[in-house]
Length: 285
Image 1 (cartoon, one colour):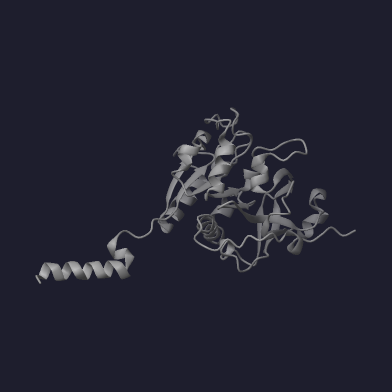
Image 2 (tube, helix red, strand yellow):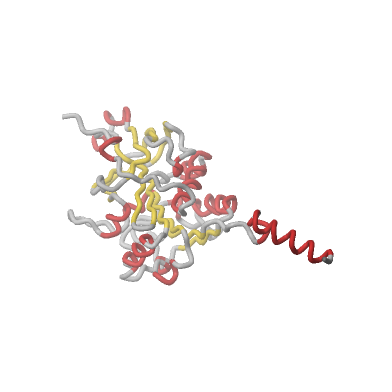
């Protein structure tokens, strides 16, 4: 047997036991970040003279660390069945009815966009929403739009920024492994309605603390700020944090965002059994 045959057999065996030798390592997730604002445009997603936003500048190196590809866009028209085939994880930091013009003036989503997004999730896509993602496709009435039903809650209002405490309630969940057990930080804290208590798995609560005595609208029990769920073969996670630039800059937040992405991409267990009744305090009579 010639030397070249010996080498070929050796490489074949190594390729069988060490897949990384036979081919490239498994690629990281293909991520689409959509920051279209049909309503209010937050400063962290507003592009400056460099053509990039604060959130984009944070996420790009995180994606590189994960071996992921990241496409950043304000074109909501990319949310369609054909385009979504190119992504494993879609991130929304959006506002308003994205099928409408106005706001930041960027291209609108087609009328079928939400329907096609939901079909993509059900087929195995991973969806992440940050902060004003719950301020998208709202209804002023009591009905729940398909998008709000998917993401699990609807923004209703917020007060002045204050230092609240994010209390992790599922310490073993892989999507929040790097989140401190109790993290006090200043941010703009959304209040929600139409929470899908039957299907959400709460990951962290906002502990309001002394602010109850300062702002009447926050004189309520602690409530969910990070939650997740499964939908068909796909995964959904919402994190209400991230109004402020310094939140995105915090090492714990950046590490948690990476864990959100990996979880949404199916790289860790689903662990999304509904738990609202077990972890969210009720109002005192």
